[in-house]
Length: 226
Image 1 (cartoon, rainbow, N blue to C red):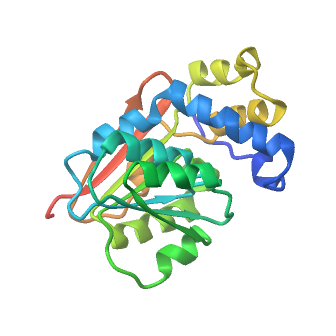
Image 2: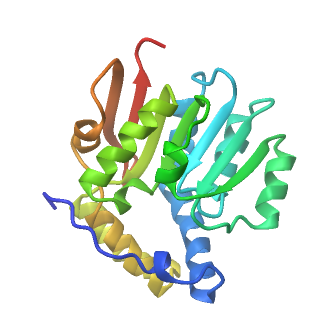
């Protein structure tokens, strides 16, 4: 488990309306709840927001951002979901409205979105997304993120023997073949120690990186002159 190892994840290759893909996205919502990622990220963000604008990159079906919005309970919260697929279901959009959150879906490649001129946003978050990238593209992505926000939080898979063993047991809670395959792949491509900090650009930033919960790896970058 000392070196990251990337391999293709099946959910990325399946059509968004494939029954196995829909089942796997439902599995991921359960896994996120078990990992407690929304709780950890919302606890980290709370008190850091200035203008109540939050962007999630690699947002998928929007379930994670909705969980954040419900936990933050911030009046006037505005959320943007950036993903190359437009797969946010109507019930999730309704959930944002019920939470008093304004939501915008940007169907875009994350690099294209980050490179496009735009205003600074309050916070950018990523959940189980960064591990899809090799180090050099990831270094480029993090540098772009640093130009667009003062506060970035990523919750990722922790690369450890315990997390790998747990990923191999997901069939016990009814996860399908796509989820079981991708969970193992995500652990092997995950992070440990200070790997994300080493890829973050130098400058006036306060970085925090640590294991969190049973299976997660939390990275926080906060501009120290903000």
